[in-house]
Image (cartoon, rainbow, N blue to C red; front, top):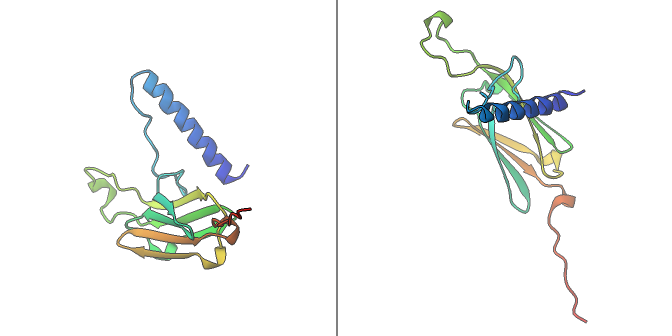
Length: 148
């Protein structure tokens, strides 16, 4: 079993648990932002859009260590991994701790084949933008209709 399949199964279990919690009036099952070394789905949060030529992936990723950032594309799978540094506040001094830190991995299934050789990425103001040009076979093709 590969790691991607494991996370899909964990996500399915979490959905089922949320359903049980709702049935008993307890609201939603709490979502996990980070697991040691990996993140099942919530970091970084992503928006995915497209035009005729490209897919655009915008990732909300403030505070990440850019030198740890790794982006890979295999077939129709985009993987983003890296690390958010620990807070400089000593653990025993916390009153509240909501900012997660540690290593993360986010895997996103893309809706089509892309041209891996032309992928680009930029990180600015906490937003990671990845531009994935579509493979020629995935681009819309205009068909001329002949009148007889």
